[in-house]
Every structure is written in C-alpha cells, then in structure tokens.
Image (cartoon, rainbow, N blue to C red; front, side):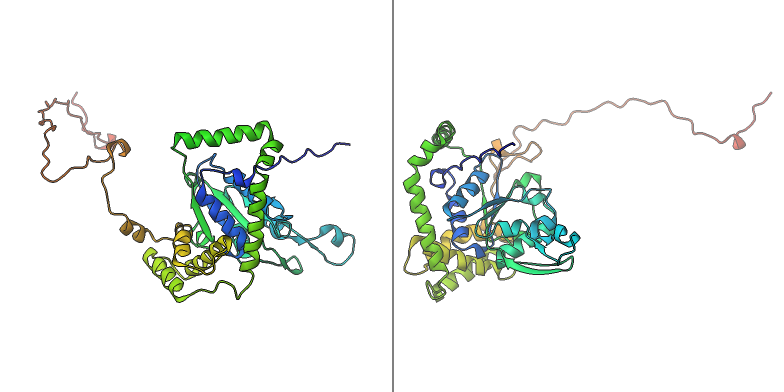
Length: 352
C-alpha cells in the first residue's frame, strides 16, 4: 500500500521581501474577501505562488485550493452525484472546488488562459460569497467565501475588460533591479530550502503576530457599525475614480472597502484620506481608462537605450541634420524589352 507524499511546508509570509504592494493587496483581500480577490500580473519568478500559499497559512484552518487550467465547470461549481443517481437514490449535490475553498484561498495560475465561463463563476462566487448551481436537475446554494488569487503573465494574453473590472485589486510586479535586494531574497530562499523548519521557527513570532492582526481586522470589518465612511473619504474616492475615467461605480465601492480594510488592519480609529490614497493604485490599475492614463503622464522622448530600432530619433527645436548624408545619384540600367504573349489563334502565320 502506497502512502501519499507529504506536502511541502510553505514559505512564511513574514519572510517575503521586495514586494510590498503584493503583501498589502493579499492582506487586504484576506481582511475582507468581499473585495473580489487579487489579480497579480508579472513575469515568472516574482513570488506570486509563494505569497498565495503563505497567505493561506495565516488564516486559521484555511484550505489552499488550486484550480488547474484543464478543470471543467462541473469540477469548479459542483454537479450531480452520479454514484447516488445510478444507485437509484435521490438526487444529491457533489461539491466542487468552490466548496472546498470556503474559508481559505483559491489560487488560479495563468487565469487569463481559463475559459470565460469558469472565470465568470469564479468572480461571481468571490464577490457574493455564495455559489449557486442550477443544472442537471440540481438546485443548490452553498457558502463560498474565499480569497481569490489569480496570476497572469501579460505577455501571454490578457483578460477582457469586463472580467478585469470584476477583480477587486490588481498588482503589477516587475523584476527587481536592486542588487542588494535580490541577494537578500536569494539568501533567504536558500536558507529556507536548506532547513525549512528552522527557517520557519526563526519567523514564527512574526507569523503569529500577522495571524493575530488578521483575526482582529476581520472581526472589525465584519462589524457594520465600525469604521464608518466620512464625507471626506467619499469625496477623495470620487475624485480619484473620476480622474481615472473608470466605467461604472465598482471602483468606488472597492476603493471604499479597501480603505476600510486597511484602516482595520492598522487598528486605526477612523478611515482617512491617507488610507484611500494608499489603496487607490491597486484598485485603479486595471480599471484606469487609457485616455486618463495618457493624460496623467506627459509624453516624453524615450532614452536612446530604450528606443526601438525603428523609432525616429527625438529632436529638439533648432536641431539641424548635421549627420545627414547627401543623396547620391544611382545609374539606370537598360533592360531588354519583353515581347507580349499572343494567343495562337491571333498569331500571324509566317511567310513561306
């Protein structure tokens, strides 16, 4: 009888360095799962999966469920229990991955490669906290409150704007260019690989503090009377969303809830404009209208090292073409004229 291989222990969340925006977005989504989850864009090797696994460990008894790219809609939302049906018993619902992820983290790598039907069901459940199934003679509803974490590499395609808007927060990761920071992260990873339990023990106190803070923040957010929104907060949120040219009001709602989650995480007495400013970019990054983004950044000539080979060189007023070469004459060669093809029926017979 074969035994299942033990699951590898996760890298501690407290030891993740170099990605402050990612850490904040994941913690806010864990404080208030109703935000709609986190979309992480970035190249390979930027700790996307590591951070998602580490987040699940901060939630008490939370499962970590991975949705594979080849999953069917039935395996995600649930379907009819065929074993019970074939045995002649009553129709029974067989839970799917959404039910297994309840109370934990549902992780989807390369979410942009999933079929739209699966993404719609994912985002519906993530935003509402309920999975409703109406198919195969089954009418069933169950709680499905989880932290949705989706990753994607923009080089492999993106999501439709309608689906992007359904994600609560978005973080765009880039490769680290600071040599000292890269070395510190590599050393930490090598130390973890060499002695996982010893490395985790060294960060146990920080992990416990994060888990306790998360419990307090979730309890505060669940109290509808705590941390009400003031007029100044509403005004700040509205101004930011109008400037970003977003469609609809989902951005306003997510920004308000994100600012409240941040205030709860920090144990603040009230929601302030500073909380709004610190969550705004994660809320607007994937919703900002291209025209608003272009208006916010004045056009600049790209440095020579970053210009494409086909780009025209940037010039300042008064510059002259001091390096231009004068045109050179090119000789013309005579080409032997071609005789047109004449159909045989129209050809003139040769004289004898």
